[in-house]
Image 1 (tube, helix red, strand yellow):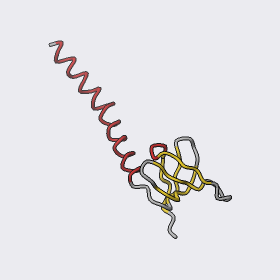
Image 2 (spheres, helix red, strand yellow):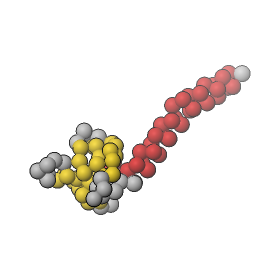
Image 3 (spheres, rainbow, N blue to C red):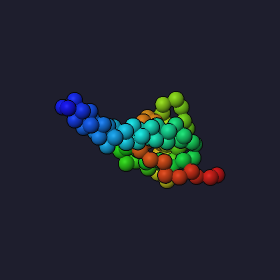
Amino acid sequence: MVLVIYAAIFAVFYFMLIAPQRKRTKKEAQMRANVKVGDEIVTSGGIYGKVLQIKDDTLVIEVNADKGKLRIAKWAIQEVKQLISE
């Protein structure tokens, strides 16, 4: 009987905590994989920028009107704001 209770607690724990986290992680990985040149992004540090170049695991972004450029890791992308059409 105790084993059934533990199994039920684990099942509730899994469906309330672990499954949503896996779904969120998968969605974030897909978002990072679909970043394109011209997208506006926000980094995990709060830096807004426009993607200029994409290499394996890094991006070059333009961060202000003075054309300042930063190289960041792809994992640091928090959000893709919009696609800028040229």
